[in-house]
Image 1 (cartoon, rainbow, N blue to C red):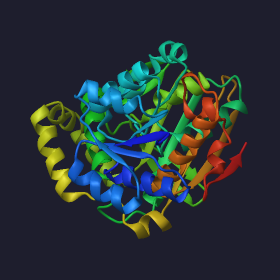
Image 2: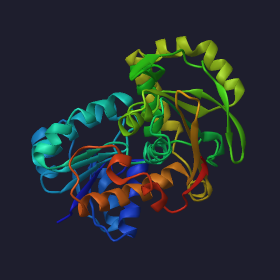
Image 3: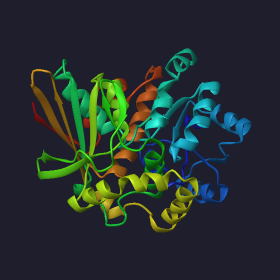
Length: 358
C-alpha cells in the first residue's frame, strides 16, 4: 500500500516528481483523470495507479483515504485545488500542492484551524513556486526584524530554458488564470492593491549583472506576507525592455480579453498544442536566480540572492524532499514552506546556493 499519492501524475511536473520519487526509493500511487495516460507511466515506473476525476467525490475520497498524503500537481489549481483539499480534510490526508496562484493560496490558508483539528498539514506552493523565494524572504526578514518593506525578484532571463520551452502547458494556463482573476497586484500596509500591468519597472543587481524587472502578481504576495508579516511587498519578474513597454501599453486590453472565459479556453487549447515544457538538457543545465531585499523605516536594508537549478528540476527534487519531511514529522495546520521547514531548507536541494548582501 502506497503512503502517498501524486494526483496529476501524467502532467509535465507530475511525471518528473514520480520519476524523482522512484529514484529516492518511494512507491507513490499515481492518480489522475485518464487511465489511458496513467497505465503506461505506472508500468514504466513499476507503480500502482488509480483513475478518478475530481468531480467524482465518493471515488476521490476513497482513494485519498487510502494514503497518508496527497501531492497535488494538477493545474490550473483555480479549478482543481478545492475538491482535493476537501477530500484531504474529510479523509485525514496531508495536502501539498505546487500552485503559485494567489486566490488558491489564500483559500488554502483559510483551512488552518480545520487542518489542525483533523491532525493534518496543508502546505501549498511546495515547488519552485514558492519554496526558494519563501525561504529567502524568511532569511532576509530574520536579519531585519523591524522591516516594513520587502521586494523579491525572479530572474527568468537567466534560467537557461530552451526558447519556447521555458514553462509547461499547465504553468502557462495557470498564468492566464492568475491574470484573469486578480490582474496585477502589490501589497501595501498589509492589503493587496491593484496596479497597472507594466508599471513600476526598475533595475535590480544580480551577481551576474543588472536586470530590468516589472511587478507581477506571484505567490509571495500571500505566502511571503504570512511568513514574514512584512506589510509592504512587491514581487517582480525580469523581462526584456521591449516586453515591459508593450505590457505597459497593452496591459489593460490583455486583462480585458483574459477575463472572457472563451478566450482563456481557446488560449488553453493552443497552449496544449504548442507548449511541452523545458527539454531534458534545459532542466539539467538551466539556472534560476532570486533576489530579496528588506528595508525598515530608518532606511536600513538586508538583502540576499539565491541560485537554484532549473525551476522544474528544482520542483521535482524539492517536492519529494517535502513529502519525506511531512511523513516523518508532526506538522499540523496550514503552513508556508518556510514556516514549516525553516529558511535553510532550500539549501538542502541539490544545486542551490545562497549569496549574502547583508
